[in-house]
Structure formats: structure tokens, C-alpha cells
Length: 178
Image (cartoon, rainbow, N blue to C red):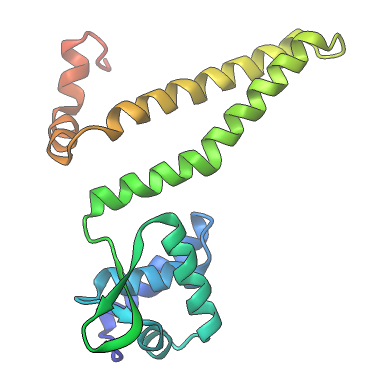
């Protein structure tokens, strides 16, 4: 997969740009995009040649993508080199990324907020307004995390049905928008 079509180039470049907006290194996102659209596993040399990036960047990117759990190492019969492939199921990939973001972002924030709230209760210098804001933020994170844990268990088909029902469910529950 050394010669990319213009559509493949556009996708890979855009995915790299989006990655930077999501807090992911551009090369990491581009390596992921290449592996996602690749019909078969690629080795690091193929990735280097196709994307025209440094071998060290590819190695670092592959390690990070494996750490996220969306790229895995595979072996190809007759080839001693390591090959890599991306998850292909978009919904499962979304779930894995959300699990990692929860673990890396939500959970530490909830721990910090919990500690701040506990400290604010003891610290007379912390005003009631600040403590109230922290409690409200913690409740938001707690509720959002609980909702995510529930939705995370749904099979993909259930998610599609739920999204399709959308506003109808809110209307039945009496929670619809006017």
C-alpha cells in the first residue's frame, strides 16, 4: 500500500488534522488512518514508506496506538517482521477510545474533584460558592460516567435503535422539547 490514491491521502491528512484537535499527535492519527483503510496488516517499513515519515515516529505512533488498544500486533506467515492492523469495527473502536479517555481524563478529574471537595469541607478559607461549584462539577462527571458505563454495555444494534428513536423516547417520557 505504498501508493495512495487522492481519496486515501485526503482521508489520512484530515484524520491527522482531526487528531491534533482531539489531543493526539498528527503522525499517530495518520498511522491509525492508514492502518484503518489498509485491507491487510502493514509492517513499520510499509508505513514509513507510504506516509514518508521517520521510522522513529512510526515506532512511537504504533506503541501509542497499541496503548490505546485500537491497533494490534499481528504476524504474517513467512515474514519475520511485526505487522500491525487497526480495529475495523467503528463502534467497538469508539468504545475502546472512550474507555481510554474515561480512564485517562474523567477518572483523574473525578479523583481530583473529590479531593478538593473533601479539603474544602475542612478548609475555612474556601468559600461556599467555590465548594458548591466543585460539587456540581463532580456530580456532572459522576452522572456522565454512570451514563457512559450503562451505554457502553449496549450492543451496537441497541445503540442504533436508541439513536433512531431519539426524540420519540423523550416525548414518551414527557421530557421532549417544546
